[in-house]
Length: 127
Image 1 (cartoon, rainbow, N blue to C red):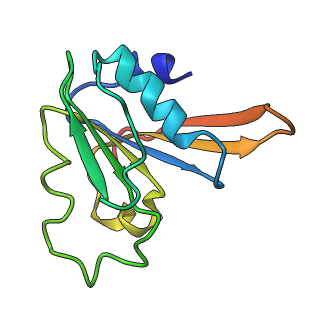
Image 2 (tube, rainbow, N blue to C red):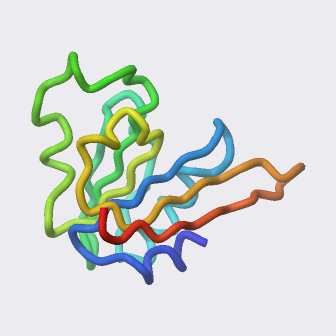
């Protein structure tokens, strides 16, 4: 699924990835990143907020799980990741949504029982 998502995005796009713990958000980002040419290991950036990877298309990967709001954070916390040259995937995006421009896709993952996942992909062009 991540590879299919990668086919739909371009540099400067922001992809919001939501879902409960353990639904495969980072796995989806890993698959998309591989398709975009990233060869290094993709790990969850929960404790560092974000990572940037070089590939055919650069990838920014943010995980905002531990943030209650952006109010107490540095004003430009997200700026280095939300660049025009990279595709940015944001896990747990609710806290940042009011600040985000150019959201292209919204992906919602849900447990479907066992190893099954239900995935909803919504085009968000024009936000």
